[in-house]
Amino acid sequence: MTDLNQHPYVLSYLDWNKFGQLIGMNFSILEPGKVSYQLVAEEKHLATPIDVHGGVIASLIDGALGVAALSVVCENKQIVSTVALNINYAQPAQVGDQLTARAHVTKSGKRIIFAAAEVRNQRNELIAMGTATLNAFPFEKVSQAVQ
Image (cartoon, rainbow, N blue to C red; front, side):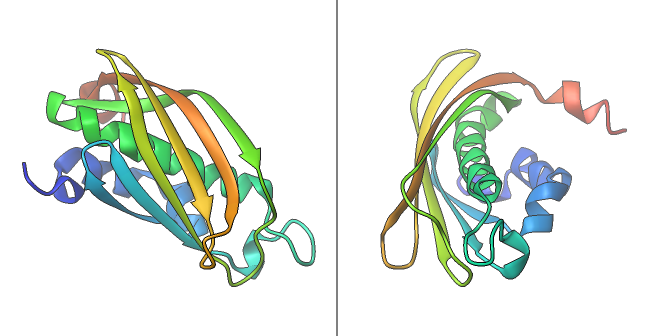
């Protein structure tokens, strides 16, 4: 399949990811193993009167890492789940910031995938970086649960 953004498993992920929809995340698979994930920081994302909650940034990173991993296993009829997530915050994001997480797979095995990501704002300032270990497993495990 040429456009992974239209892959049935990717479209299923979009439908199932209610949390991503709730906070307003959107992504684009650039190529297998590389993803750009976006979110515009809004007042609903604040933890203080001026700073975005770290959980929003962590969610953006986790989503980007997950879709990067998904993009390398979906053709094998697999999806992924995060096993371990590490986040380092460089500076706060604020309302109106256009946040972009760029993620890439660093190593992919039969079941375990490693990925890394950075989040930057519209001024290309580093907001946070993260890494994850993800587990690939058969799509049927989840699809049967939702039927």
